[in-house]
Each structure stands twice: as C-alpha cells, then as structure tokens.
Length: 237
Ligand SMILES: NC(=O)c1ccc[n+]([C@@H]2O[C@H](COP(=O)([O-])OP(=O)(O)OC[C@H]3O[C@@H](n4cnc5c(N)ncnc54)[C@H](OP(=O)(O)O)[C@@H]3O)[C@@H](O)[C@H]2O)c1
Image (tube, rainbow, N blue to C red; front, side):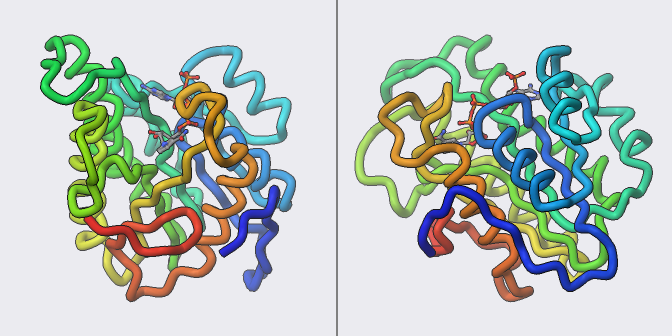
C-alpha cells in the first residue's frame, strides 16, 4: 500500500461516516482528525488541555476533554459519546517516556507514567466506547514495531516496548470480546515525524494517517485481532 498525504474513503453508507479519535491534540491523532473532517465525516476527538480542544474545535470536530490516565476523566466518556455509532475509532493517545536503554531500570514514576498512558488508558477508554460503536465498526489501537517480540532484532527502549506489547495483549482480548460486532486491530503507524518520532522519521503525520485510514477500510472480519503495519503488511507479535 503506497503512502499518499490524504485518503478519502468511498462511503457505502446512507449517512456520513462517524469517526472517534482518542488523543488528537497533535501528531498522528491530529492528522487523523483533520483527514476525517476533510472527508466529510462526523468527527469526535479528544484532547486533554484547552489548546488542544481549541485546535479540534476550529477544525470542525466535536472536542471532548479527556486524559486517558485519569479514571475521573474517563468515567464520563460513555455518557459524552451517548451511543454515537462510530464507524471508526482510533485509540491513539500514548507516550514514549524516558529514552531508557535496555538494562537501565526505570524509576517507579516513569514506569507508572508510561504504563498508565499506554496500557491502563486504553483499558479504561475502550470499555467506555463499546456502546458507541456502529454495526461493523473498526477499532485501531496505536501500537508500534517496538512492541513486536517476534520481530525484535536488538535491545531498545524496553519500557516503551513493554508497554506497547502489553497494549497488543489488551487489543487481542478486545478483539475476542467484540468479535462479530467490530473488527479490532493493533497497528504500527510508521516512523512518523512528530514530537515523539522526531525529525528523522520516514513519514509525515498526514501520510501515516492516510495509510491508517486506508488500512481500516481494507479490513475483513478475518483480520480481527491482528497486528498490522500502516501499509497493510502483517507484523509478527
Ligand atoms: N511517531 C512515531 O514514529 C510512532 C511510532 C510508533 C507508534 N507511535 C504511536 O502513535 C501514537 C501517536 O504518536 P505521535 O507520534 O503522534 O505522538 P505525539 O506527537 O507525542 O502525540 C501524542 C498524543 O497523545 C496524547 N496523549 C498523551 N498522553 C495522553 C493522556 N494521558 N491522555 C490523553 N491524551 C494523551 C497527546 O496529548 P497532549 O498534547 O495533551 O500531550 C498527543 O495528542 C502513540 O500511541 C505512539 O506511541 C508513534
């Protein structure tokens, strides 16, 4: 699948597609929200501060304030989504944490911050949005090639890798729980030039977002519970 800066899907439905992006203040999440709005979709997107909320509002998305690590913040999400019937959900919010080398033990605070954002966050958020999924919805959690145990070639950022590998486990359980109701995958967005990916990345956020939107459209029920690259390739767990 080749990268193109934007992607507008065919719309077989009689209504506009409805898209939810969790963690959309900047980077890949913002690009996902921008492209969905530009394609005429009804977009709900979350940010955790006023500046992010304003960015999303100006874009034309309905902005919801959400910090995925805070139970009190997540607790009202289902109520705010109000069974909206989302066709596509991107659970994108995540942090890298300290650039620890393997065998450098993380502090408890660093461990908690990364695991709370990347693992506890989705485990709190996804149950809140299940009742807001449309029939035949597609849900993507933002994983990473660094999560892949089978594909790992050398030591790396072991705290981040451990958190995304745990996220992959979470995704597999979600996929089993929602089988027949939604197609749920984990995906690597590419190495993307964002605050997290840095300037050396291979893709612009818009290119990654276009690929991820195309990937969701290409899924069949047999893909439920899979781990994919942004270009549609299957990644080893
Ligand atoms: N960039 C890459 O090369 C790359 C590669 C593999 C995987 N990924 C994954 O792709 C996703 C997006 O990455 P990115 O490169 O776009 O990163 P980014 O530019 O750093 O953006 C991260 C996004 O997550 C949000 N976020 C972080 N903690 C949050 C929390 N507790 N509650 C709610 N939102 C929170 C941020 O909101 P604030 O603005 O409020 O901080 C921001 O919108 C992440 O899950 C990342 O692990 C990225």
